[in-house]
Length: 463
Image 1 (cartoon, rainbow, N blue to C red):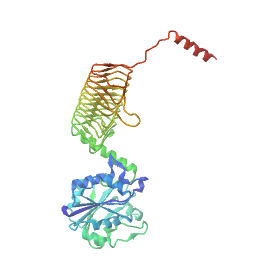
Image 2: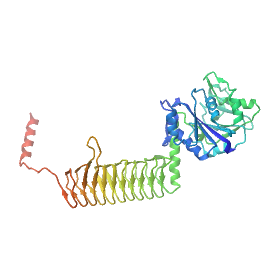
Image 3: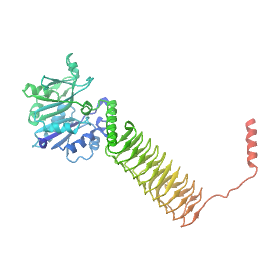
Image 4: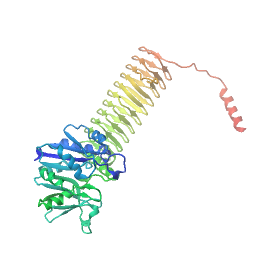
């Protein structure tokens, strides 16, 4: 049956409970848009066809889904309810589809096993429910003694006895296609909301003598999407915790899993140590024996084996070699690429540079648009002046160059191998191999002037 199953994902609504101008499906959940989780799940379970029903902010939703290869999309131009969403999707189904699974787009943590179970289920109609301590706000599933679903009662229609029911509707369904096509035509419009509810199908099936299966799923957090931002944060924290704990069981030391935030596409190797308040995002790769100290954010970057990332470092779009030492309080910007045993120290900012083996930028420097050789030492407070107000220019620094503190390198400029730049120098032209570059105003000392200055300030203060 799996090969004749289509999954319809309802991704048309706005999510008004989020009190946001953005669709609920676009909000970030543990590093990715909510809707992207279902797109990833569909690629894993591979139903015969996947149809996304979109409407509100459809272009942004499609972008969040990402690689749309193998997916179908239909627009629900009139937001007339969940049954209306299924109705617009039916014409797009292939002729060989025999079964339809319907999933809300805001349920990002649906387990793969549950979806596979639904695909193999032989019953004509199935609804998934779950039990929660406080079911307020959810529709309830009324069942018979055999556990078959009799009807779904909306919160606003609950009677006194119905309110005692703790089995709530997840809005996850499985239908035989022929039954659904016939039944949709007869769903009445709800007078209160002026919409067509898919929940009515359960009672209609019973009236047609069709037994409705009910899966009482034990993990409510897995099958209920967030109703508001607080719920989204709760789910996100659970997902982040699960990822961190998985790392623990795969040879990674995570000192406090509740304070580490790792995206799904991040790769972390064995014997890495991750301190609290660390964010690893995008397609980041952390190789073996790396230590990441507290407060770091590493995005779309590669950190080489044995490197140490000091406290409060931001690394974005960089590729750092093995045995590097970075930080603390360092900003490594996109395009930074280092060889092994490179040091980028405290309060340093780099951008679009390559750094050779053993070179050091120890502290308080900005180095951008530069090519740096091996064994180079960049002194404290050095700046590559790479921007002239119109264009960016490159600074080239050869092997074993020493650049003294508080120097400015006015790009485009080249410092050849083994050159020395004296502290406080402004370099405006090429420095030859084995040469010293120095540009300072001649120092002048005026003896006794300090005494006169102090006396002058003292008299002014007395007045």
